Length: 273
Image (cartoon, one colour):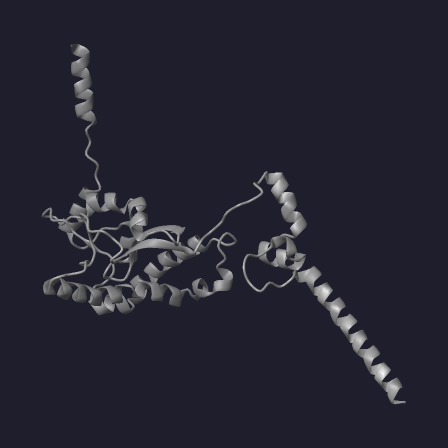
């Protein structure tokens, strides 16, 4: 009797092993085999994973590769995306460039953004004195960019300057917290998939709407600096400001010098000779 019971137990255990093995095989066919780490072998992934991650099955992707004549290998390395921003003391983003690869150096992005040309053309006082944008230590000092003092040895005066500007930089950077607070969708990683969704466009639109929110509600940054933002009309349609002299100076700074008459006159002289 005991022998019979033992044989039944062994047969039952063997049946369970076969059932679990069949279930594992079914899971692997649907999801693909799991991996302990390292690179993902796309060929081992099941159609369910392909459809969830790439919106197409494995067979459909191969059809697209053939139809679009895509290369066999595509190298795609990225550590995220970022934008190069300039924030005013009244809590608004006044310049943005991007998105760019998150691995790129801030100085390189600044040079590509064309911001230097804008600053060199318009960033002056009415008296002709240069104005400056204070940047983080990644930037180099230039005509309109002022980073903190760097180096192995800096003077006490330079240390005092860095400390004072650091207290200003911190509240200015609250704008990035403000954007994700007002538009929490940006902070939801499952919806921000590079190459599958327009992450950069989402962020740019959120910056624009965050600027409007700052104008209408005056959050932390303008209150901290006691610096009122412009009106919606001034920001979005370039309406006139209350200071007429400053308004005229701003408009004049955007006018391009017209040298066409001089060029035409020089052409006439050449023709006469």
